[in-house]
Image (cartoon, rainbow, N blue to C red):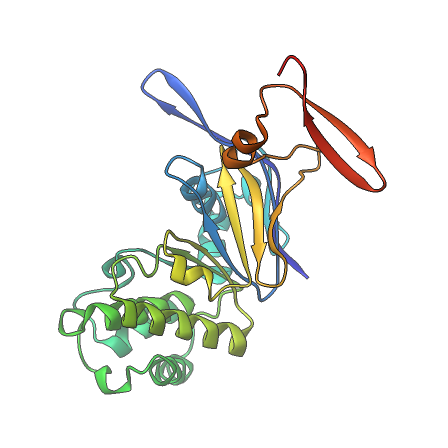
Length: 276
């Protein structure tokens, strides 16, 4: 079942007197239970995409649907409900997910309290998450008493405390050492397998790419390639028939601004134009 679908998604923001097209007709589909990494150079649009999926920013054009909810049409009240019940968000800086005065157990109970969960349910869920994340011995410790890796795992627990359908993660391993990052990715996998959570993360960490189902690369505000372990890297053709050839391919083939395209025996061949 499709959980996330972006159709010709456009987002424009103003920088001084300029309009910047952060997303330029992006198309993307993510299925239930997938773990997907979004990668791309700075300025490619991946952070803007995450902000749109988190209902922090509204699309300028096109559609973004999560669990069938059209994000561009949400009222302020519906947006709050969406963030509470449908998605969870893990920040790169774990402390943004945590309340410093509360213990680990209390941090895990807080989002459930805000959602109106009864006390026993809150306590049971907190205990379950502490066990899953290997933090049972830290139950009564406040965040400042935890290591960086423990803080990030607790932040993950807070983000999924209400069992969201979709977990969004912004560089979840960026500030962790290799061992802590690997543990974080293992915990993400456990939560996906147990709860069926769909996970979308932005990352620059190549280690992360080995722990996901798909890697989607964004270039110039559009999805350009998809990588799976079983198929390798594939170019994405959007609904308008556009594709982005990587710069290395264009250079190796000597392609200029114009090309010739022909079909030969079921193959699509792209050749240099004489005036390319």
